[in-house]
Length: 492
Image (cartoon, rainbow, N blue to C red; front, side, top):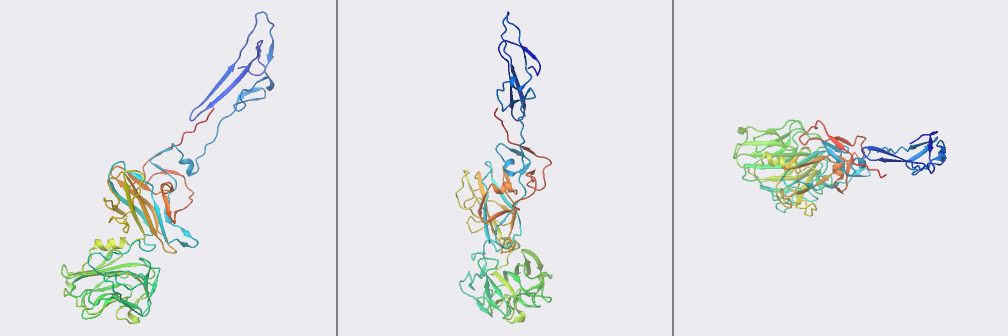
């Protein structure tokens, strides 16, 4: 190709054509210069200078241009930015050791100034690759932010009385109703079900049966309580007066709990009580075996009596158990909210008490599985029904209900309950199989599922990179990772 001012000898014409081809990732330039000359042996020679734009014929104005008498390629470059989640997740992207999107948590959605009360989130369907599903684990903050997902079953072994206090004094085991005194009220701000009972001294209620534990040496009582006001010393929480005096009351400072499994025996906790906080209280007595008495708070053993401090004589019960009072007077009755009062005619184990506390969480999970990606069965919990939930941090997965641990595909659903002012937060959920494991903890992970009911991501927007190292399932981060972008092709 000749430049401006060069002479070309011809008797026909000369045309310069330039063509660019730009593909990703390489750029190649093809310049075609076609010069056709037919010169007769006896024709006169003519000089044509190519030094002005009008002397050029531009075959494709999108690709070449003539500037100052120079024919040249047009720049065919473009800037492809990756700054949004959608751009990073376009088709054909690939990741190794990295994840897309910022860290995110699931929370109950807020409407106006209050949280919605309940929320559900359904995960994407996981392909286990033909292995066996082993575990469902979760990392949750504010597990006790709202009411419990499920109430205690009246069929629990050894249960002789159960008061849900759902706007009723009825015992769920016998069907009989207890008696209330001093005008206690029901409140919707409870720990279980629709209601709880609110007591202001000297209000209390007493059980429907005055001989529940008569003749027993082994027994247990559990309940949830939240105090409005710090009690006086020796304020009754659950006490029976009669031939045998037994029960729970606050101690000499009002901030600890004393447990009398029988008159003359006593076990004390350290001081721990504060107002406006839910506590799960459990007391157990084992007179026949080991002669031990124990007090658990929020599932943890807080006090234990020596073997020789418990009189193993059977209880002689000829009076009602009063809650939350000792003798029904204002000075010995607690001011607060009580819920889910349960009485057993056997000693509960530490594992059982921990499980009772765990199942009182405001967050629970259910699972389902199938042989194809389109799952249609119901979500179920560890007992195979829709009324139970996986609530611990680590939950073994067994074949039960609509879940088969040997199915290829599996899915979880999360259930959350909030108070008007506090929500639980699901930070991460992991389903682990023998051949694969899936971790949901970023906005991309959660966005791949279904926001079934009143659930949202927090934060909704985060000023952070969308590509980052992935978390290891057992904690920490890998030393490196790669991200491969989508392929961009330009048509010439």
